[in-house]
Amino acid sequence: MNMKKGRWKVYAAWIAFTEAVGAAAGLLTREDVKLYESTIRKPPLSPPGWVFPVVWSLLYALMGTGAARISLTEPSEKRRRCLRLYLAQLGLNFLWPFLFFGLQAFSFAFFWLVLLWALLVWMTLSFRELDRPAAYLQIPYLVWVFFAGYLNFGVWMLNGS
Image (cartoon, rainbow, N blue to C red; front, side, top):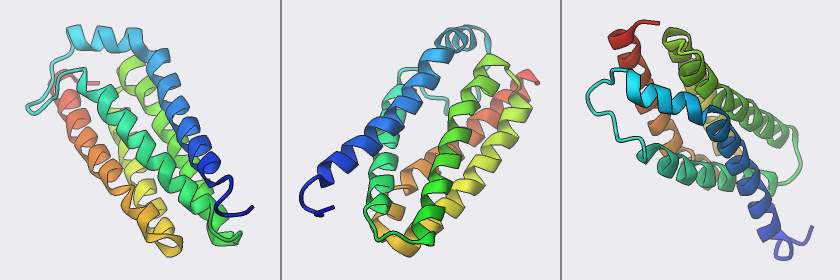
């Protein structure tokens, strides 16, 4: 592919795909989130509910941009590994709201987030081997998932599993 022509399509496709995964999880758990908002005790520093879709939309755009950058590198085993890690973490990310909001399995959801965070670190370090900006684009996501871990742990401690 000519790197100038069609490059924007690669970015658009990765961002749209990533945003769609996030939107699907949000739509499928929206009733569970409403129940959570009205019944669950939350730890200090819990943002208002409207913050989450805003932050996640921005994070999904950054994630998709990073994945696009990786997909535009020369074909290699490293690139395949990076994209597999990306898809794996996106799958873990997609399932977390079902565990946390749907099942209210707060302890299990917390350990799921720990696994997701470890996978994100691995993915980010792998991205760094191919494209440093793609790795840097994941830093806000790493920070947010760490913060989500704090919130998840706090909900677990305040409400049980």
